[in-house]
Length: 152
Image (cartoon, rainbow, N blue to C red; front, top):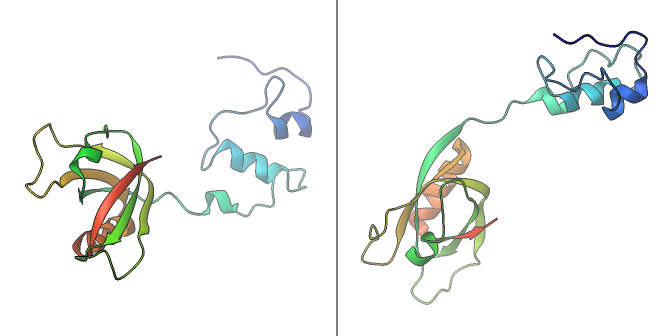
């Protein structure tokens, strides 16, 4: 166990994270950034006692969403761990009836098909890790639109 240097800690060393003993490690119940934001609020004790906006909401839990991407050749470029945007284009015979729209942004690819695991129509199934509301949006878009991905 290391010992912290004696003497008072200055506001500057806490706010900038510089100097020995600045406490830049994990902060119970929040992040180091939240602790810095609280200490910068002007209170000598390091905050007003109210939770900061950065700590108010935990991240949404992720679910696995299987998504049929229209172009299997594009899917062959993907690897698990890649980040992608998913775009939905209306599925009409002549491409009429609406603009393409972004359904999901910066989502993580969890699984890709093995070579040869594509459909006769050229599509390929990819599994994405997304928050539950995004999975719902992807499922709905997959019924009415052709889906494409772009690498982030």
